[in-house]
Structures are given as structure tokens and as C-alpha cells.
Length: 279
Image (cartoon, rainbow, N blue to C red):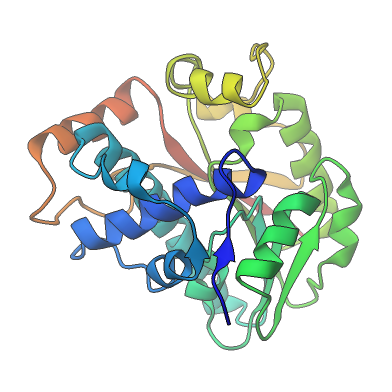
């Protein structure tokens, strides 16, 4: 089978950036992070990666990959924790891109669902078709009818990695309340930044996507902002994205990386949140 060509400036190209970052992180920080899929997927793609390779020694580029990798490890911890009691649960990736978190978390009995916009799912189906007990669902997450596609008879753990930044606060609240009604006993895991993080770290990315007015977009300055949404939605934990689940103990991590990780906690308020849906 030949390689799949990715055009410059295409929607598919936007999926390459986090994919290559995971590949880079696995190569540069192997004691901390492993990704058995990223390198193989990159090898299956006909694309000029030179612009990313030229930045591999950049501290900020390395840290960007490290941040994404630690967020994935955090979410994998939460999925594994849920699957201990619900081994046949639905594992639902909200805004999947080319992320392989579901397969990494696969315990051999769970059901994996990858959700994203139709053009993204078309690319995913071409590059990494759905495997056993796996389904790729094309949808707009704001159209809550996607929930009817999820078989959650044995539980559901839903997660969003780097996704909720692009939604309004009201959209996230409405989605969580609907999830609680649809998936009692389920769990939602997501990352968020504070207002400073949104306005300074995310602003450029959001504007590149045509989102010039970011005033209503989701951020969390204090965990109390996530409470009281519904009697069925309970905020259970808030942990630092960079250091809340695992220590940055890879010998290749530089002092500047550790300093930036602390800034993410203090200034950007970069955290991973867990919500439980009461039955």
C-alpha cells in the first residue's frame, strides 16, 4: 500500500502538527513518554516534515510536545482508572484528530469511539481505519445527537484533550449536562487553561482558526466555576496537567522545561479536570 499524500495548507495538515509532536516527544523523552503509533503513522504519510525537523532542538517546540504528551498520559491514567471497574465501557475521544489514545488505553474488552468533524474523520479513516471494537463517528460535538451512537450499557469514559478551548463556556456546560443525563455512572475528563492561558497561550492558535473574538471561549480560573451545573454532574478532581499525575523525571528534560511546567500551573492554570455523572 502506498503512502497517503497530505497537501500543504489542507485540513489534513493541521492534524500533522500534534502527531509529529508526539513522535518527537517519544524520541526525546523515552523514559517519560512512549507512543507506539505516532512514528508508524508518520511513516505512512507522504508529507514534507522538514519544517518540524528543523525545530526539534527548539526549547519551546520541545516543551509544546512535552505538554501534549503529559496531557495524554494524564488522560490515559483516568481512562485506565475507570476501566478497572468498568472493563467493557465505552471509551469516547471527543475531537480525536489523529490521536490514538483509545487504542493505547485498550484493555481488550472496551469499545472505542473517535469523534470529530466529517473532514477530519475522512482523513482518519484513510490514514488509520477503525480497528476491532472501534468506531469513527463524523459529527459536530455541539449537535448532541452523537450521544445516541455510543453504546454505554457498561459505562462510559469520555475525554477531550486540547479540544474544549475552542468551545464557549455555555456549550461545554450544555454538553456536560446532556452527558450526565445520557451516561449515568460515566466520567468526563478534559483539560482547560485559565483566562491568562487562553488570552496569551491560545490566542494565536484561535485566531489562526478564524476565531478573532475569543471573549466567550471556555476557560477555568477556579474549579468552583465548574460546580453547580447539575445535580448529576460532580467535579471530582483537578490536577496539574504537567506535574499532577507524573513527575518530569526523564533525564533529557532540561531545567527550562521544568520552569515552564511551573509557569503552566501558576500563570496559565493548565489543569486536567474529572467529572463524574451520578446515576
